[in-house]
Amino acid sequence: MDTLMAGDDALLEQLQQRGPMNFARAYEVMERFGLDGLVVTDPLNVFHMLGYWPQIATTRLGQPPTTFAILSRDQRQAPGIVTSHFIYYYTFVDGGPRERLQSYLYIDAGDAGDERQQAPYPGLFADRGAAPQTEVEQRREQRTAGALAIEPAHADAGGALVRALKAMGLWTGTVGYDHPLIRSIAERHERPGTLVPADNILRFIRIIKSPLEIALMRRGAQGNTAAVGAVIEAVGAGANYRDLRRLFAVEAAKRGNRAVFMTIDRVSSELPTKDAVRDGQTLFLDGVSHFQNYHGDYARTVFVGEPTAAARRLSSAIVEGWKAIREQLRPGLSYRDITAMGMETLRKLGVAEQVGFGPHSVGMMHTDEPGVEGGDFFVKDNLILEENMVLSVDCPSLETGIGGSIHIEDLMLITADGAVPIHDIGDHVTTV
Image (cartoon, rainbow, N blue to C red; front, side, top):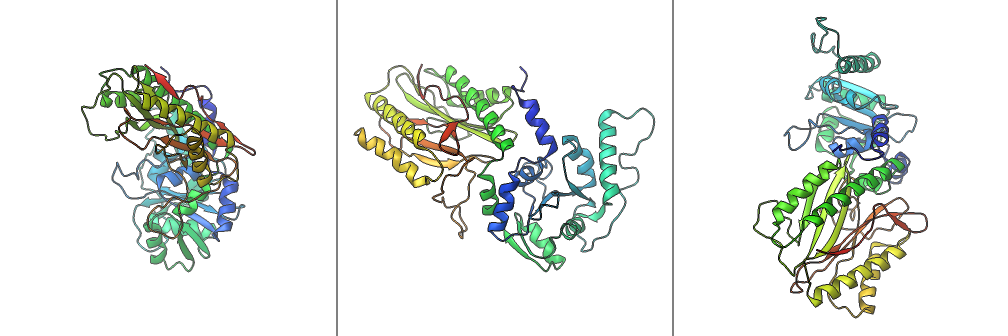
C-alpha cells in the first residue's frame, strides 16, 4: 500500500520550505533566557530549526557532528546552516529550496584554527558531458552553485562556523549551544562572547507547537493509533509478544510512520522473549511511532476472553479517571493538578489501587519537555499547561496480582479554553 496518507503531500511541501519550529516561541524563549542566538548540531535540533535531518552525523553511522544550524534572536537574520560542500550537494538540497536560509559550506571536517576560504575540489561532481544531466544532477548543481555564489566555501568546518557566527552577529553576546564541539571551536578561535548549555532551553521552545508541528503531530498520532489497532486485532491466546511487536513495526511502516517501541503487558525489552498471551489475561499495548520525527503515543487495554473481576473493575475506574481529566484539561493547570484529578476520581469510586496518571509533553521526543533546571539529571518539573502543547497522560495500573496489566493513553492538544484529542479516541478497553 502507499505509505502516504491523506494530506501528507501538503505537509511534506511545507517541510521543504522551512523548519517546523515555532519561531515566535523561539524568539520569546531566547529573550526570556537572555540569549542572542542558538547554535545546534544534534540532528533533532537541526531538523526542528531547518526541516533537515543530517543523516551522516547520527549515532548509528558513528560519525561526529558535521552540520550546524544557527538562529539569531535578531529576526532580520534568516536561520543559517553550516555543512560540508559534499553534504549540501549530496543530501541537503534534495529536501527543498527552503525559505530565507544563509548557507556556509566547507570542504574538510575539522578545525585548523583559521577562516580560510577555498574552492571545492576540482572535479567533485563535475559534468563530463557524456550524457545530459539528470533532473537530480541539475537541481543539486544549481542550488549548490547558488549558495557558493553568495558565500564561497571555507577550508574546514571550524572556519565556516566562525564565519557564520560573525556574519550573523553572534560572535559576541550570549549564545546557547547543544554540543561540546561547538564550545571547543569557539574557545579555539577565542570567541569573546558567553556560551550557555541550551538543552533545557530548546525543550522550552519545543513544548509549544507551531501550526505545522500540530499538523505533523496529528498525522503521526493517527498513523500510530491505526498501527496499534491493527496489532490489537492480532491479539489472541498463544500470540507471542515478540511477534506482536514486529507486527507493530510493519503496520506503522505501512502508514508512513517509523516504529520506536511497543510495550506489551509491561514487557518492553527488545531482546526476544517467550512470553505469549494467555486466555483470560488482561494486557495493555502501548505503541510509539513517529511521522517526520513527530511522535504518536497511544495505549489500550485488551481482555483476552473473560478477565478477572479485579481487572474489569480497575480498568473501568481508570477509564473514568482519564475521562474526568480530559474534560478538565485547559491552560493554567499544573502537572500535579492533573494527577490529583485522576486520583480524586478513583477515591470517589472507592478504588484504592495505585494508578499513575502521569502527564508528559509529546513532540519530537516521547517525553519532550524541560525538566527542573540546575541539575545534571533530568528531573520532571511541575509544568503549567499552555495553549498548543500536546499532552499525554499515562494511566497505568502500578500493581500486580490483578490478572494482568492495564494502561490507557491518548494525545490531547491544549486549546485556548480546553483540550481536544488529535486522534480518534474509540474504545479504551477491547475484548478479543
